Image (cartoon, rainbow, N blue to C red; front, top):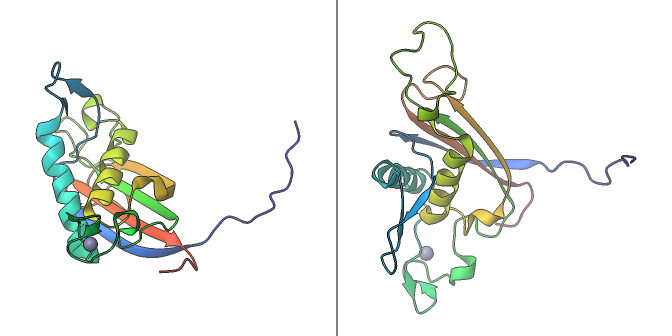
Length: 180
Ligand SMILES: [Zn+2]
């Protein structure tokens, strides 16, 4: 196998928003089925729901976006049709997520350490919860428009992108030169 020289350079991105969310991060994980006709729910619904709600509210407060409220196929608030709805709808998007999880009391206090325990949740489950909430907030139309994703998991104040207490910092970028 030979590698050929790339025909196109890596894209450049416009930084659109830095959204700080405070709360206890919850990963979007397993779904349990409640039985025939009774639907399904996330096994960690009690922690996931308030976390996702915190992301949605912080995203709306930071960017001024709003959620889609259907009225015969258009948004009741802005009259945009559903397929085009979202502040950065249908634009190639990159997302950089830093999840700050609580540092356990057993961890060394003055020394940097990393959240590698089961209790800190899987990094892809954290990303899933954040991307779903970004779509629900009305910032993007759907998470399928995210073409680049970076996620890291850290303890408070132990990384340049970490918050001083549990939560997340989500940076959103759109493709440079993309129409608004
Ligand atoms: Zn709208």
